[in-house]
Image 1: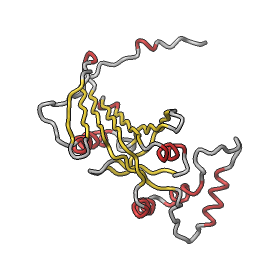
Image 2: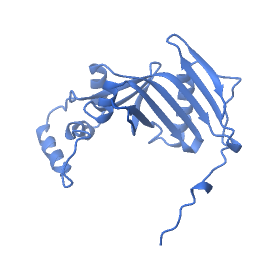
Image 3: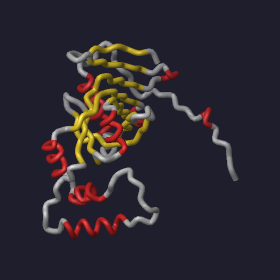
Image 4: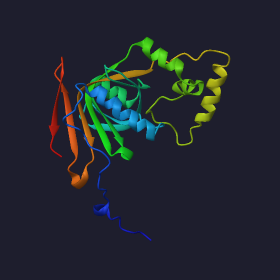
Length: 215
């Protein structure tokens, strides 16, 4: 029996933490890493998961979850197939956004920036650190292309395992990393009565400025 979903009454009163606006760090990366360490203690397996949004040449937005594999003072790095839809979008329009949401902490971080390919050597270094099955998996799929409903990827995997048996698995040239260089970073902390704390950092090319936003 079908039952109507009562969306209007799905709600939570956020109250776990707050932002101390009188004691702010000058760089958003430092604050992000503080928040990330807290998220990692609670969910060590998926704290680095975020939504990557891109825009195509015909101005159609698209979002998907990716795993960030490095964070430094430059930005946020993830890896993908350079033939994928996301890569095609980035090649045409490098303006992207990342969105982290840590439900257990009632926190969200929104990042807007420019995505650029990292160097081949940096992609090699990360690829060489991956488990062998993941390395072979990078050769397996023409990401985002249509395949038959009954396509047997396990058969493809077996073929590749035979091909690379006793050999080092090299990185496919069509697979590598992007670094998202942030230009705006907004920290959101859920608060009671929907009076959420919001803090935005903006980069002018030389330095970061910060401002508090209304809920």
